[in-house]
Image 1 (cartoon, helix red, strand yellow):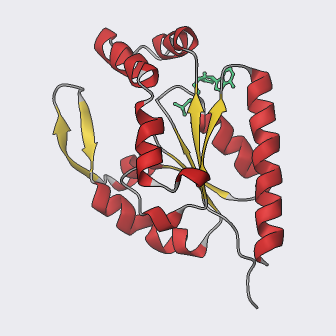
Image 2 (cartoon, rainbow, N blue to C red):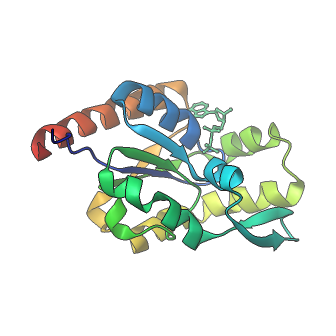
Length: 174
Ligand code: DAT
């Protein structure tokens, strides 16, 4: 029996913009598989050294890509990560860059107990739209979309839009 073709979706953006919240609910509503790259790296210890400045392990990007490649080729995966140029371009059918207003993002990250430096760096990353630009360079511009992620209403709206897009993609490709 041939299984249905399903799309791969990348959710990216600065830490705290709401990728995990959106991704998990999206997986519930679409039946796609949610993968958080941070958790995957932690579970498999897919690290290559330690960043003293940020006090965190450095992701071994090649091993992350190797680990996921087969699953991504099968399709039906939602990937959540605060970066996007480490993945093969062919993996994704659509890329969403979540965006949050600075003051709102600051409050969310503060409640995570981030250090002052990490807080400032992340809010700056959002101000300079670093991840959006990374996505526009790494993928075809027409598959990259920005989503406002400030309020619960934004979350619901984004969910509805992406569920609809996913259903349409499945219809069109099967
Ligand atoms: P990320 O995975 O991008 O780091 P998250 O999903 O963990 O972000 O969300 C960070 C916090 O913000 C968390 O407390 C939930 C909240 N949040 C997420 N999306 C939101 C939205 N659209 N409106 C209000 N709060 C939101």
